[in-house]
Amino acid sequence: MTQALSRRTFVATGMGAAVVAGLPRTARALNTSQARSLIDKMVGEVNTVIDSGKAEEAMYVDFERIFRKYSDTSYVAAYAMGVDGRRATRAQKKAFSDAFVTYIARKYGAQFRKFIGGRLEVVEARKVKNFFEVEATAFLRGQEPFEVSFHVSDRSGKDLFFNMFIEGINMLLTERTEIGAMLDKRRGNIDAMIADLKKAG
Image: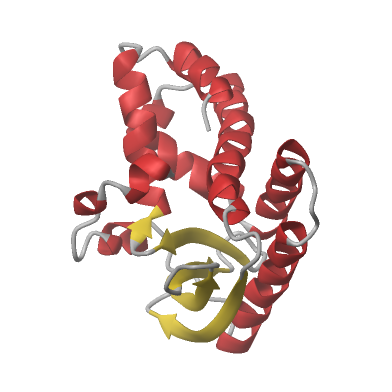
């Protein structure tokens, strides 16, 4: 995440449209109130972990539990692997998904851990095409507040968030680039990339 936050030029205006295009055009009963309620609950759990005073590793375990509970992990992992997922075996896809969720929970959990002494606060929610955007504000000690937003959909049959932006940095696009770089480093070897992923974050 530190790398991602220092590479603001990676997320250009309009790139989020690529993410929207990748979502199935389904809209069940999800509404603005439900989308906000989902993120309110998640933010409440994140704030509880932030205030818990637990050791770093214990906090990462809690953040992974929260990520698995509230996010569409299957979609996020598949998007991150991109076209390389087409040549991956079922076993490789499962191994990647498991490693990826742990990796991303630690990576973004490290950012949330910096909120100790601060808080996340949901501000508003609105419908955007076939999903809902829920905006929150992060309040940190000694820093100006900044925006964190979540994209929520019921495409999986459950209300879950499938993307997150921290100060405009797009999680999905950033992680697809990171995973692609890992694969390039290993000359396309998926098993080697998964092994690297288990040690990353």
